Length: 359
Image (cartoon, rainbow, N blue to C red; front, top):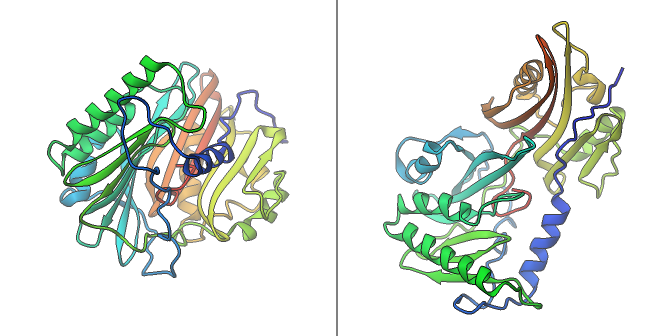
């Protein structure tokens, strides 16, 4: 029997942030006193980078190599506890994705991420350090970006810290926001152009290299939304696809969200509870997914499902690569009595395309 969970699921609302980003791109900015920058904020994603046919797309996630630009860029983050992986590649470039989970007083996890795009010659072409979700400190973007960029571009990190610190101090000093724009700043050095605002974070565009066709593959680990929606409906989700890309299961406080390229699922988030009594799982996965996790490709489905079930049995989280697939599980425990427990798990499968929301 399906059991509702009193522990609230953290609902990820991509519509709000997507709408906000669209507004940021469309409206004309007004610089604060002491802040200068380009006439328009950088586009997310840059125009045309995903408007191409498959170009040797590889969506198998891999650990970051120890050497080369990828290793140097991500080493400071990994040493600080971040998870980083190469999440997709094609004939022109490689996409890296890094993430750390920040917990608040209520034990809710708010992720902070960093994205990098390298060209075929192992040079950084583009990077994004989005502002973390939820309540966050002003300097978290700089704390992530500065050491990563310094690892490949000496002195770039010091400039990042200075510019963001000056911007934030100016914003606090003035205490008001312009009515017809979003406060932002921008600067350039010999390596790249930089744009920063409190909503989008820091976008870095290299000056001496670019990638024309950005990787978009996900077929290794995911199926299509149209092939998965009937199974979601059978599991009690309210789903109306197309166009809806978010589904809810109110009877168990469940949710299911995806990012898509066309009909192809790129990344998925869902929440599911766990009730362990006398060592047995009382809320079976099949109650919500009667045919299994059919939004996953058959090649990775058994391994990913088993990893999720392990976390549900123990009430613990996981961050890593399973069968070439990025798997993030944030667990929140409720009541625990010996071997019995109640927990809620927020699960992410795959990484979104670079420069797209949600991150």
